[in-house]
Amino acid sequence: MLLERAIAERTVRTTIVGATPRFLHQALQNLQTSGVTTVARELGISERHLRRVLLQALGVGPKTYTRLKRFARAVHAAQSGRGIHWSALAADAGYYDQAHLIADFRSIAGTTPQLLLAELRDSEQSARDEIDQVRFPVMR
Image 1: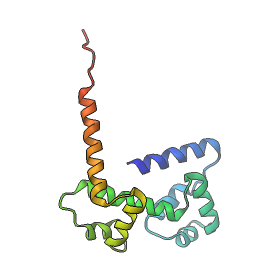
Image 2: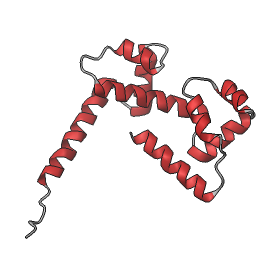
Image 3: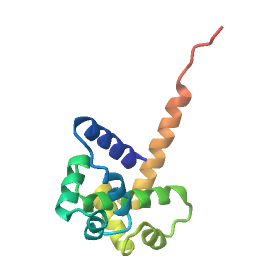
Image 4: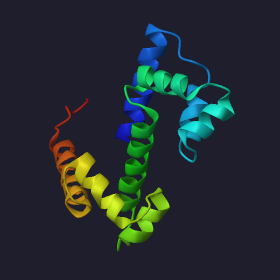
């Protein structure tokens, strides 16, 4: 997914430019299910240090990171299902309720869930159409 690729690329660049703390990967994993305070305590570092490391490595703080990951989970789940039940999808992705899910769609994607999914389907179809039109030379 796009978010995972961006994080991986940013982490690689940070590793090349400066030392990435060993706990970064574990922190990113733990932030999926726990808050900043809990993750920092589990890793034996201060919350301030955790925020600073994520900001340096990813360009966003822990709350923004978890918000984007939750949004990415929701988009992925919505793309993989038919007959979407938005309230169930919201709960599964980690949202408090459907209203918070829709608010994130509007805030992050600038549109409603249905319109974003339609745009993603259209762009995937356009990419497939472009690939189909590529003419490869005949090998003899």
